Image (cartoon, rainbow, N blue to C red; front, side, top):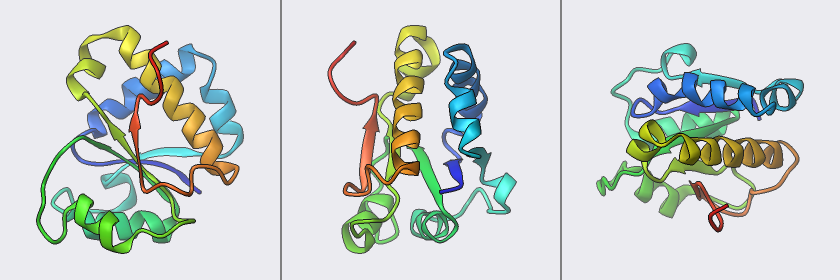
Length: 142
């Protein structure tokens, strides 16, 4: 796994996520694993790329995809792609449950950052490869 690739709908949130990870002393752990945080432009993908092509790129190049919670249901939507293409052992998609809460509630944002760090560390160590999508934050409220 190379790291985290932010979808166009959350790429502006990537810097904030990284800041939260640095404040929580989690960035160094991820950095030791040589994990990168990148946007579509960083990897040469157009902003208008369809979900299926984006997901395939992530799987081929080793990126965990970070996206927001959206519900497009066409043949190339993320939901359709995961339903017909995802197999055990492939990288999961991390979906930000409530983007506006992440933007406006610092405690919620810290929880999201901590969960993403845990998930990325786990994926790098062979965990979480049995589910196609993980909603963050996950688990009970802390």
